[in-house]
Structure formats: structure tokens, C-alpha cells
Image 1 (cartoon, one colour):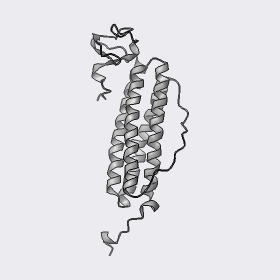
Image 2: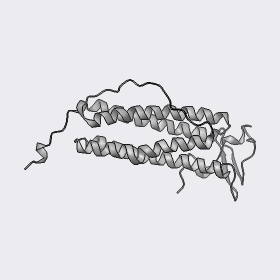
Image 3: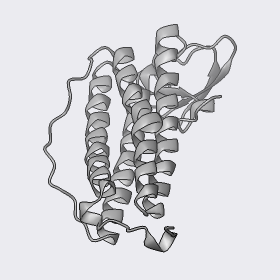
Image 4: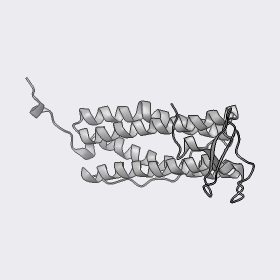
Length: 206
């Protein structure tokens, strides 16, 4: 009869957990670059608030990469070199947000939970817990992206059914109305810089 002491924890460099960590690290670095590229695309369409949200998310993806890199170091591994190639992303804003959300959903619902199970099976509970926690954060990223996508498609990004507070992310001007002004009365930036105060800083409804 086998006991827990009989279960051999595989050498880290030979484990599936090691491969999963390497893949996740590369994936998070790629996600950060995708968000920064997408933010630049949205800036060109004057959707500055969403672009700012994507940069906010990119910074979190950078932290996720640092977590995975740190775990590799703890167990004696080192990050593999990455190839700076981005997948082709849609240029239309709503479709772009949908594509980014699908990537987050894949990580949150399939990839990272699977990696967490592998890490537990191979005897790395600390790594498993990291995968699980980051999966939960990626689900929040997806919800934020979907929230902006739905607002764009419904026309609600810069319109409310009743007066609400609008916050200029350039200078901090606060206005109460059903729509933000075409340009900020304080700094002159266009309405693309205005966000509902209830969404600041990128709160997720529901």
C-alpha cells in the first residue's frame, strides 16, 4: 500500500508544472504587449478612457509575469527567451475588446485551472495556488473588457439614462449630466477622456 511519502515529486525541470509556468510567463508577457498595442489603437479612435483601462490591465499582466518568473526562480528554473510576436488583432474597437476578453476567459476558465491541477498532482501547491488566484483575476479582466464592449455597442459609453457624474481622466474635472461635454471645460481634452465616476478607476459592475 502506497503512502504519501512514496509519491515521488518529479524533478522540477522535468515536470509538467515547469512547462506550464514557462508557458504562462510567456503568455502574460504577450498579453501585456497586446494590451499596450490595443491601447495605442484605441487612442487613435479617441477612446482614451478604454485605452487607459487597457494600460491599467497591462500593468497587472506585467505583475502576473513577475509572479510566474519568481516561482520559476524559487524552484531553480529560469525564464526562457521570448519571441516578440503579437497575434493579429481586430482594428474595430468592440471586436478588439471581444478578442482580448476571449483570451482572458481562456486563461481563467481553462488554461490556469488546468495548470493548477497539474501543479497539485505533481506536488507544487504554492504554484497551484498562484495559478488559481491569477485565474480569478483574469476573469475580472474579462468582465471589465466585456463591460466596455457592451457600453460601446449600446452607445452607453458616453450616455446615461439619468444624470450621473463624469470624471475627466486628464485633469480631474467632474461634471454631472446624462452625457459628458464634447470637450472638457477645464483642460480642453475631448470627451473620450471622460469616464463615469462609478467606473473609476475601472470598477467592474455586477
